[in-house]
Image 1 (cartoon, helix red, strand yellow):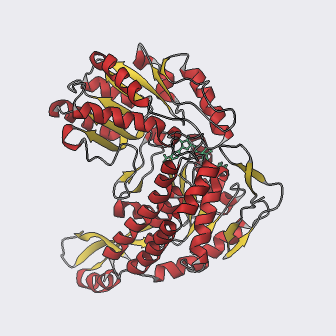
Image 2 (cartoon, rainbow, N blue to C red):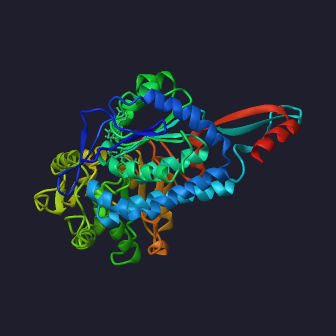
Length: 515
Ligand code: NAP
């Protein structure tokens, strides 16, 4: 049996028994074991702070960029091996696995490009000098410097490579060493990615640690200048935020959590039009892609009552093309979900949903005998918008619900807002006045909005695709965090400091730091 190890204090270490078991999502056979018991996490954090931090801070953005570029190239060169692992452990089809692996290498490459542009600096100025007194000589200047601690990254099960890499890219480029903890259930992929980086000696001593297995007492040892970046469920986020040591030391926590993402079809959209088919393609893709295990997947579909019949028929037609089955088969478009716990949670959620909505497509009983399968399903909430379950609970699988409504723009905003804040919503319309109302109304509730229209029907990057150059995160239920977004993604790892002094001295001293 493969035993996963952690990379702490520059060496691979396995924890003590008892181990947790990881499964092949298709055969349900055990594929690996892992434990973090007995690992000295206080020492691991101290090592990263004292060895990795100074090394990274001494490197320029351009040097950090070259490290990220090499990390990206390594993931890309080994993508076939990583895809095969992802098919086995996560149940992803090859196409779904590529999304994770290529997302990882793509995000690292993007941040490498940004680092090259920032060039031979180690610090950044934030804005220009600010006049703060009568005299033009006494001025203020904000500077951004890397936090002196460790970036503790805690990741969800569904994107073992991308989650690891996107957080690593931003932290390392910002100049902060990383201790990354993948979700236990799918940690095989994350462990292999980090092995590949260390085998090639890409990461200087102490700059990148990996903790496989449960978090153990990790949070007891974080310090004030460390930070935590978390992706996962709202419940775990609340536990991390409320951890006594995290609270006592005011350790900043960035959270990406649950999100009841929506797609809204405008009342102006003609069935059969480009905008209509863009909407149908996006929504059906979001239901089936990665078996619905995407933080950005569409869970609520708002359809004007007048367009309901055409929309339901078009979605059913499109979803009929989905093939649920063994992810190793090339004809399969939807594999199993990744873990037995996910399968149980989704089934429980579907049972609750069925009490307030009618299933209009998909057969929950039509699944292979073994494997953690969940059949894709489409529901219709008649009397719709009041089905509170639909707005409260995220079913993290291939399930979405149509909510018929009047088509009114203000009402659409109110309905989507019942989700309590989300990562992304898509709006499909060619009516400028209607779209303007909906976009401005939805913006405070979201980190990202995709506006689908005839002009971009064949060019969009997609509702569910997180772009490294754009913000990923959302308010309220979605966690209130923010990742990526180009240089914005580095800001969580920096301290902003206002320095007051003589204008020319500031220019000479800070100018040289920034030069
Ligand atoms: P989860 O159960 O909350 O676990 C997430 C991570 O937290 C795992 O690494 C887990 O470790 C760790 N963890 C659990 N308890 C902890 C504790 N007390 N202290 C420190 N770490 C702890 O979530 P999941 O099952 O992996 O992911 C599913 C959920 O994540 C879904 O609800 C989905 O909405 C959300 N999600 C959000 C995003 C986003 O970007 N917003 C992306 C993906 C998923 P172990 O695995 O070792 O328990």
